[in-house]
Length: 339
Image 1 (cartoon, helix red, strand yellow):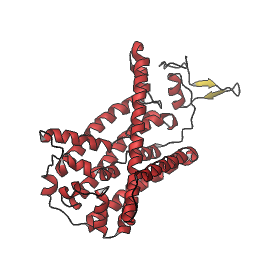
Image 2 (cartoon, helix red, strand yellow):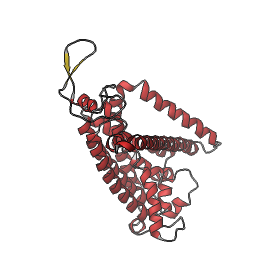
Image 3 (cartoon, helix red, strand yellow):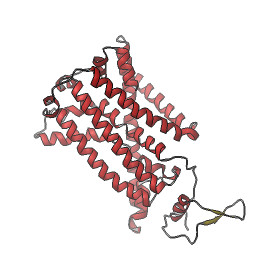
């Protein structure tokens, strides 16, 4: 079986002779799956369903992203368009995930999309298409990482401005914070690799708990706007010829909140019982994160005041101002943002 090609064929048995001794050792189901494609087990399979759902949800960060991108969401569509676009995108992502879940169950390899293409494409086109797919996926993940870290860096700067009004904001400060976040992520993914799955399970709990903490605070403390201002208020802030064009442009912003939905597929060779767990985790992550994101989007639209005021805000992230208005406290707003 060639090591440089993906070959799908049925093995004559589920036994393999190890290099350390002559005794036959049974292969696990996951190892048999890898052997079908000419690959050997290289990583520890220490991710369970809960930990991989935690990884997927915290990579997507749907409800957090909906808050951070509140202003762009309202620019093309307003409150009504934002809600419709979110549901539209969530439905589309769910359909996409159903296809990817099927692929991941058949071909549970960490390369994800480029492995699927390499196996399923016509032999004459397999190398070229898988190479192209691999680079597109790599560039997409790099762009997603850069944009997410940039948002976090600028949110930290916004918190500094909120707590220290005389702080002299400089763009290069944000760049240094950007690299500090990258260094922290690198440390967690390398030196904390052994406990990473447990860490992700904990982060999933914090992800859900943070949602309820923000939701309850907003609903209980904030003044509410009329339902007509949420469900019957469309804004074409981009100056497009029709509202339909404005709505479609607005859906691009909602898509950002679902980036990373394929994360589980790229951890395939570190997940126990990958053909079953990966599809489950991908579907659960979309439904869970989508539900939390839509719930918080409704809450923030009802408690943020007139949409025109948000669009006219000169502050970095208007949702921070909404938090401060709700709690009537800079410290309270800071704590909510840190959640």
